[in-house]
Length: 140
Image (cartoon, rainbow, N blue to C red; front, top):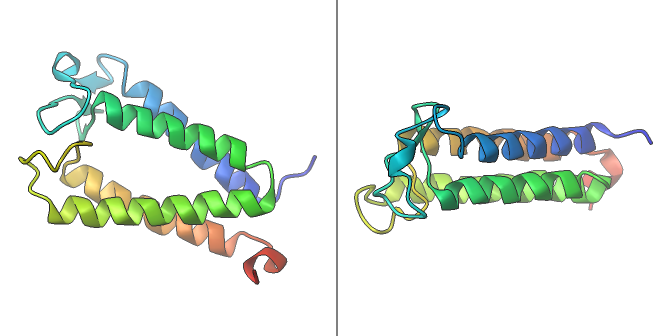
């Protein structure tokens, strides 16, 4: 079976999300691992010492990864994963910008590095979904 560029992109993005989700549960790669909480802004665990994570945050990455791998099977679902996932990450970026990071609203949790990574993911995923899909799928 030959994959289209949009399917390959969805597969790669899905695999990266799976990897990040797993790495978030590995002490050493995740600093202050012993402070990790299920959810909320009290988790001080940091993936690669930079990105604030919690059990919930890691599970979200794992679920996005599984979705990416599953949706890479067809052109239309791969595009939907990339564009839809990109929109979700754009919403997360805006959410992270407007909440007080020390409040209970920061339940994922996110920090400034997470916010800008979410922005980059949103732009990259939407662009990949739009630009890599065949013209016949883009026209829909």
